[in-house]
Image 1 (cartoon, rainbow, N blue to C red):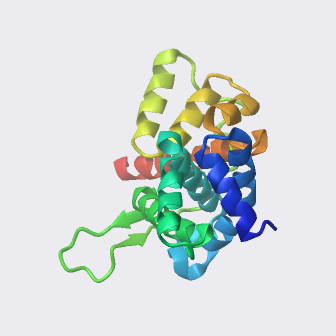
Image 2: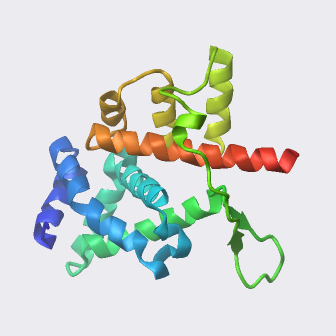
Length: 214
């Protein structure tokens, strides 16, 4: 556990573009952030899925890092105006917004377009999928550059940019260590989790697309 004061120091360091502070901040806030997302009342069913929680955590961290940590600097400005503000409380708001964006793009979530609808959308229950080894091997089943481009172009419309970049690097046979460095992830394990999660998401998406055309 890292106390609030230590987190505040790491936030200040990361906002100043200290890479070591950013890596330590990621490690410190990932567990509480995951717990926040997993709360049933926070994002409902979405928070109960491990892959989706990981995706949201990565998306939150990417948003914090965007534009050279612009949001962290905004937080520090807000804290100057309100010294009682705490980073994890502020982060909860960011995570909620990211989670809603993620929900709206989820392949198993269908948004309602009816005027006056009492609920914004509904979930589509997916059938159990075969293991990844039966769909993808060590690398995507791409036999030429044109096919690879088609896959990545399709993915760009349904997954966040940082996940698309991870998939692109993986398709180019980059190691998980290299992917982690390129995306600012804390470890090769974290990079592998992102890649596996986006593959699973695309598998669901492709399955739904196939059903809709039959």
